[in-house]
Length: 235
Image 1 (tube, one colour):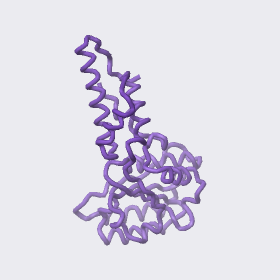
Image 2: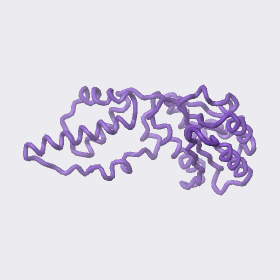
Image 3: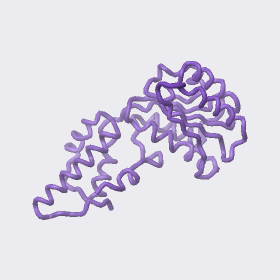
Image 4: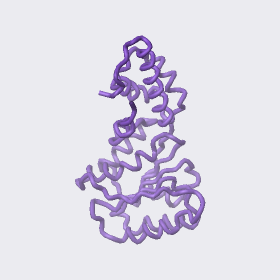
């Protein structure tokens, strides 16, 4: 029923993401497309900050490929991805490894380093990170996500395009949810009802998709009770 749901609806292009503001979307578009000098002017980081479940991590994962394609480097960005977990060494060895890699000429357009939940870095690792960002500032791109902007060293923020990725309102999610319902052949759901359902997710993309799946399943059960069972395979 929903076997291919994640692969089909996981965002891969900027238009697939639901932004909390047009300003944030425009900055991302201008950075990706090169309309804003990046990397350049002392900035080679993109810092996405906002609450849980807004899609920061998903966007961080696809940005290297989008930047690479926009700059004529092809779809394969060959980025290094790190999920910085709380506890343990808190990334000291990771930042050291990034520093060594940053010295090398990139195989594609840039050397890309994605640090998810970068706020979990220890003070020592965070201090090292702002130094590492200076090693090859015109051939390295750093992409960070955080739920705690206040925990990010000021030097790292100063070297980054800091972009708000807070929870988007229900109205912003409406077109995407309607598209999914249409794909699954679900009709008769009013915008008002759908907005009420989406609002319960409080801007969390994960919960929004969960509620949409539940709505699809409920409509399927109603049709089955009526003897009007239909396939739930999306078009």
